[in-house]
Image (cartoon, rainbow over all chains, first blue to last red; front, side, top):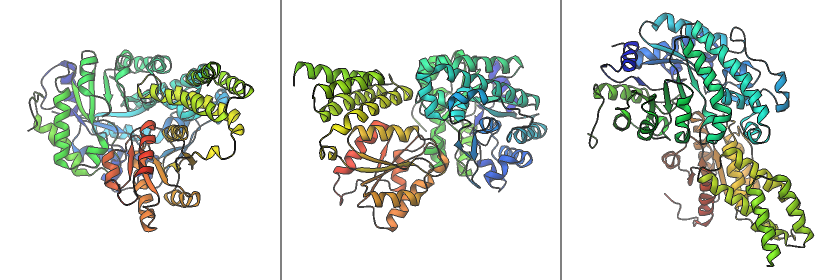
Length: 348
Length: 224
């Protein structure tokens, strides 16, 4: 089966050859074609080549054209540092004084920052692999993007002191996200949403309801309106907000290894597909193929019988230097389990 | 302690917990006007309120925004009370911690929370900020006479910088004088063991316990 066939069968509740498997490869893709991470960030051609090569090398199910979460905020004026061979990081938010929010403009994916390069990369990958693989690009959620516009700590304080400014920041970030999602879909890809600042490690369920849900709902509705299914990923703890995450209308919730797949299944498994949650650092980066296999089996034991299906994925993006052998082992372990994905009893 | 004093101190603690900065400042001033000891106001009022906020954070009733606003209130009260401490009393320090986010990362909320909780617990904290090169940690720890270096990152990509700090300390044979504790999203006890850190803390409250333990541990018997 091709990845597209697998996802179609999973959605229809049909038979698969194995569960879809998504080690969330980001800058590791640069390693596959032997270039530096800074090179793929700004070049549509290299970014496409890296991710297509990684897909072919590892045989997973979703190609995610992704380098870091800052591309939208950068296109709105945030300063991003791009080390030669490490993941980019936020250097300065777009505005120093949050009251300057009026000066911010939504990004234009056709010309701002490295959005055009990422769009080009996506179009190339779709051209190359679109017939068989699910090709996605990351959309940073409005609340998280807002944190890059004013700084995370400032945003956290504003959430209690001046919620109106937070809403303005989310609104303008939503506009950027909608435009970026449209550009991704115009290029033939699927937007997948990541909103880590909405984690219950950071904000309360009440704040999620206030600053997350309304904007995510509009974003998800827009994307689904164009016929695409939506995955929503939030890092860290999320148990208190699983219901709210499902309320956004997302088809699939991607959860971190700090959250329990078994509990998520019990809470929202009848409403949404689940994706997760093999530990990216402790297992994929630091363990060995045997440890990866064991972690995959634990994951499938907990979530393999999720009513709306499971995508075996890592709990978060993989560190750049993740050993290839461990990524291979993850796909192999899912292959080995095959179908139906029901594991019972003690580990084999 | 008079009934009145007890009531004032508990109202001060409540004001911090309730994130009420103006009330915290007002009560701190009232406390001084009533000639109540400023040190007791800090301990049984401000710090007590912040500790309770930390407990609520542990129990997932408070989250990062609440904890930050509580700390704003606590620090506002401290600015009122601290000048009235008799000299010498301020030296109740449990130890000196140099803290920062490692190079390649600018996520500093976690680090700031650890700083707040360490200060609340009586540590002196030298904050190097974010995106700090390994050599600077070592340099500043030595010049401050620090007992502990606290390293934080939220990025899997920058964890290597943590082992570099330890390597530099080894090189200077400073590991017995300066302990290293690590924390942050992707960091684990396993990782801490692997790079030879002295301690790992999963969150800001745990950081206080780890720092306290590191200050008590005899130099010779480093915890494996």
